[in-house]
Amino acid sequence: MKASLTIALSHHAELIIMDEPTSGLDPIIRSELLNILHNLMQNGERTILFSTHITTDLDRIADYITFIHNGQHIFTKEYYKIEEEFAIVKGGTNLLDRDTEQEFIGIHKTNHGFRALTANKQRTKNIFGDTVIIEKPTLEDIMLYTKKGEERDAKSYS
Image 1 (cartoon, rainbow, N blue to C red):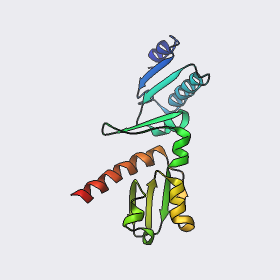
Image 2: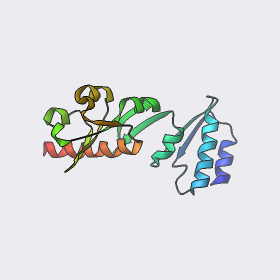
Image 3: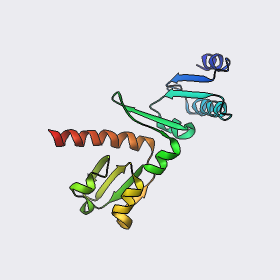
Image 4: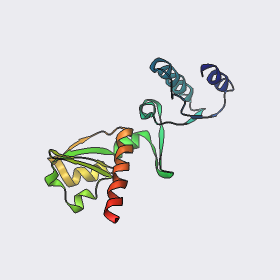
């Protein structure tokens, strides 16, 4: 893997496309590879496009994220915009009704409350105020709650 990667990077290509480049690598090699890729992008002369299921790799080096789920394009956004727009919201289930539930992409309810994902953090703050806790989601949260939202929508149309 290291040799083929070294050869590929030695061509000084402006666009590098990689499929699961860190899959199967031990943590030390994976970290080194991500550092190399990050350094290659710093001067702005190279673009690196890679697909991965390891969302923490994207958290470390991505400038833009394209989220594709079941062959559907969900969004393409600058990484910082994801942090600005999306949020995990936690609160009591007494705050939920048909209208407020529509504010969320996906919801997980328990006996102790709910945890949900919103794609409009500011609107959610305006609706719920200080009655909820708002946290930064991970990319994995966004993926999981998008799937939960699909399941919820499928049930409501059955």
